Image 1 (cartoon, rainbow, N blue to C red):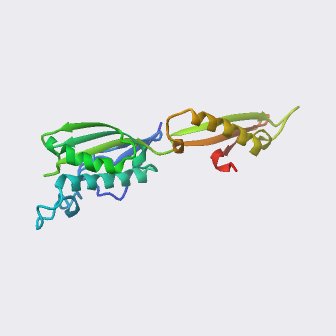
Image 2 (cartoon, rainbow, N blue to C red; image 1 turned 135 degrees about the vertical axis):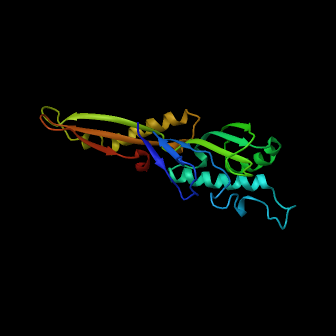
Image 3 (cartoon, helix red, strand yellow; image 1 turned 90 degrees about the vertical axis):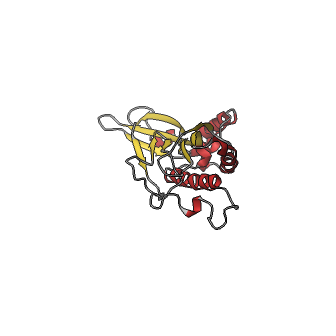
Length: 216
């Protein structure tokens, strides 16, 4: 299984680590801190010192991190709708309620989460760090492998074995299965694979992508 490096337009860290990896459709994002790695905590992640009684540092830092993580997952072909696990590190657990208010704004269905108090983070006054695990939106696919000889009695082309009518039937069966599941249908893609086999020749593979899209 190959690991694909994910890199977005987010500020790049000073330390030596990768922003995220896509491994077989699962996305593992490194912990994000509320920093631009140039000035420390950027203005958009903290209260305006001229208006100290307006806004909340922890809320602004949380928004900053979540927007960066959203860009990370978009670069991987996913979104925050595809998050399944989160880890949150807070320098002061008294900030939990304010952080949680912002957190709710980013998820239709909140992912499993671990929240831990910590004595310090790698950027001064960071207050919070978040890392996420999710998937790329196409982690599951239905595939039928159809083989048919192109020589001898009953020979035919793959198009005869996997034609539009056949794809329609298989697609209907897959949709019936989806109705029995509790997961989101949009994470599924239905592909059909046809293999053309001739004696003495290398098999030819034809992929019919996304049979759902062909329904009328």
